[in-house]
Length: 108
Image (cartoon, rainbow, N blue to C red; front, side, top):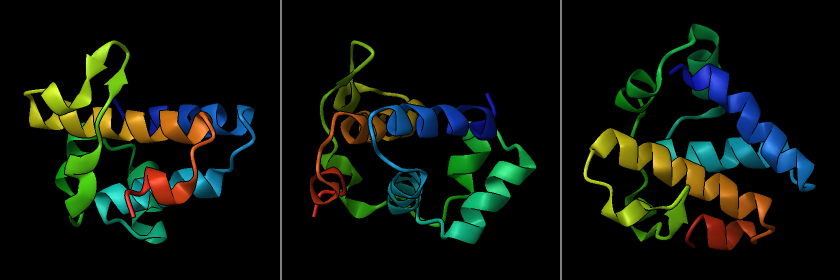
């Protein structure tokens, strides 16, 4: 699945709950190490999730602190590395939509 097809859904989910596209971008950049220009390039290229994460500069070292359940799946128990990264991102966007403070979402 193309990251660019899911990205607008992340933004819509956040905006429905009074959060912003900029916050979504901040979360994605924090997790992946992309800067704004790199994130835009990934979206423009319509890369799939595998390529999106493979080309990511660096997964944040605190990503292992992301815990909890997304769609009935505990993210810390996902065995497939790619699926775990996708679930990490899903969990962070869920936390944003639920009104959690950015500092807590970014594990600082």
